Length: 121
Image (tube, rainbow, N blue to C red; front, side):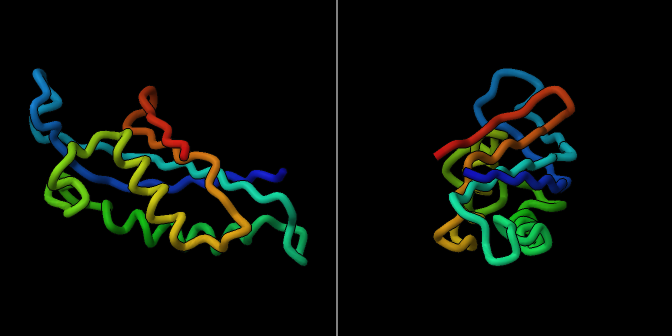
């Protein structure tokens, strides 16, 4: 099994509805998203997938969140835009773009240098 990792960042704001504390108020983060991909075999070039292609796919997915108020996005009308849910939505959207021979091992989203949440399927 082979794995590769890629990281990208985006800036966005959110508030956690129903939270008893400061996070209920509007606040922003410079989020970092780390994606780990897996493949059983390498392609004809000896790669899982070209990093450039994965970067473009991830940029497309993260453009949904970048410089936005996450609570206003359709994805978060019925659930809070927590770091956990951001990880899951990145996973779901990126998974639609990948070829079937490549799977996502995990998506880890950092909302600060010390706080992250990971989604595995």
